[in-house]
Length: 246
Ligand SMILES: NC(=O)c1ccc[n+]([C@@H]2O[C@H](COP(=O)([O-])OP(=O)(O)OC[C@H]3O[C@@H](n4cnc5c(N)ncnc54)[C@H](OP(=O)(O)O)[C@@H]3O)[C@@H](O)[C@H]2O)c1
Image (cartoon, rainbow, N blue to C red; front, side, top):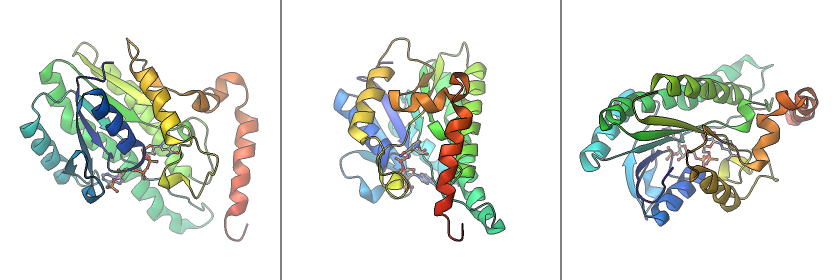
């Protein structure tokens, strides 16, 4: 994938990985717009206000971006929330619902909004974002893992639907990366710059791989194939001891 001459929208680009990826694309020469609910955090890139849980907001943002950038050819669905849940307490349902609304339905709302444009354009790419946790659960974040497994399956189907249109689908599978969302749960997360260096290297390959899986994410992505799944899941289940009352 060329990263030097794209017109890119990163939904969920107002902080963390999305913000870092936006900077890398802009530094490489691409035109970049970042979207999110709180655009006040970004003063060095063009922004658009968007709440992926609100269908009207997504369509308004789509219209605003395409009016300004009719040659948009890459849409990144980065918006996501990572929420801890205690499944012994049925009150967790509210957290499950908002996780699915942002991570899964939010992704689908954005993909749907831009699919006609990219097909009409005859070329372009979607970059969806899952997680190593979508392939190897981290039981403290059960619905998060379920939402990311769902985005993986959805991305595979979307690629099949778009075959022959000139529109590609690439899935980014991050391991734990040191952004604000991770500080509480994982002090050993990969530094953001090291992660982005590796991502940009893989993304720039031609043809771009269907999945961008950096080295740190490989053991999670391939645990089932490698026969390490049960052992890793047991290790990762120990994190549940940190829940109050366990
Ligand atoms: N960091 C990790 O360890 C890790 C690992 C695997 C996968 N991931 C995935 O990578 C993506 C980015 O994570 P991150 O660590 O960079 O998190 P982050 O810093 O919290 O960024 C999350 C982004 O999502 C946006 N967002 C949240 N709710 C939204 C909504 N309702 N509408 C529109 N945008 C919304 C936020 O923007 P606003 O607040 O401005 O709305 C922000 O730009 C997520 O999908 C996450 O699941 C992260």
